[in-house]
Length: 316
Image (tube, rainbow, N blue to C red):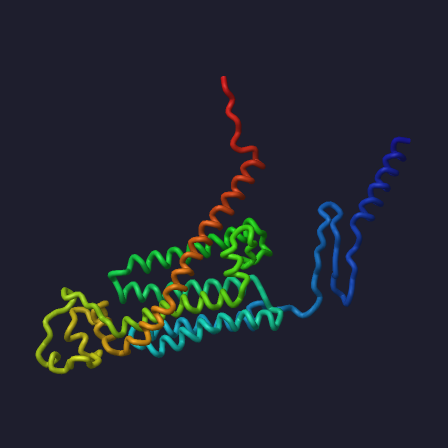
């Protein structure tokens, strides 16, 4: 009797298991969906053509931005016009990849990260050059790079860890920060601030080709035949650098090679016009850094409370 009851129980359990775990539906030879009764999750297996995220149009535009930025770095030391042209095209393509993502419905997390990393790296490389071109202000440029990288990293990390993996770093609620909400959600504001911020650093780059400041101790005595070849207000032939400087690849030698390659009027105009927006961009970076830090701290407090921390110490 007990054995029969056990068999009936086993049969009932098997029936329940069969009812709660349905077989996957088949369509065109592929599994469409299955359902797990315990965690109520649905797993979908797509039976259409496989997509290659790396070959999406917005990402291809992102790769071209990287190539243009690298080539502009090659020309950065001595060819300001070529460098500015390539660097500016790379920056302008930043707006095009967003349009392509919306037009082709190809917005991806990889593309968003690629876009941000390209922006941070290209701007950092330009500022590194400015630090070498204007060594007296090197610490300012170093702080600008640090602020830019730290604020964006913390903002991205806080968004992913606190908002979830599907939350975009541009989805900032007004309750958290009105400034960041306006900056990230208004495309016109975002484009204008980013464009003028880059324009400021580009104008400083161009100014380095018109106002050299050479430290006297980096120079050695100029041979008479080399001195005769140098005319006041004329460009210096790069072949003379090895005769003038102890190290033709030194900062002073490259600075001398940049003399009078460009008039300083328009770079000064661009620098003055774009400076207020560049300063505002640094304020936004500070706000972004502070808000992200506080958001992470709020998550830490909640996690510690859920874990029962801090524990009450027993008093004797």
